[in-house]
Image (cartoon, rainbow, N blue to C red; front, side, top):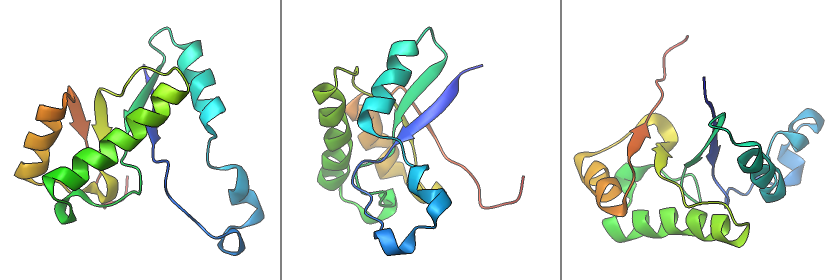
Length: 116
């Protein structure tokens, strides 16, 4: 089984909106690097866009920029570029699927709004 870590780097949550328990919920880039180093096929680092924007509201160029921002941060930490994607907000469009394909994503996943 592989654990998934979806990376979204530009999400800004004001400190006064976080509960004390939430302040350590978000991983730092050094922590993401540590997961990647543990490797062995146990952890997948997936792209989740820089600003957690739903893909339906993004143009092809905007989506590519969102993907590229995460891959640039990965490069800064010597993490291989992402090859899988997790849709923010569960939604996708045929245009986004094609953009992801052209970008080089091998796999994309989305959740659901239902209860598990």
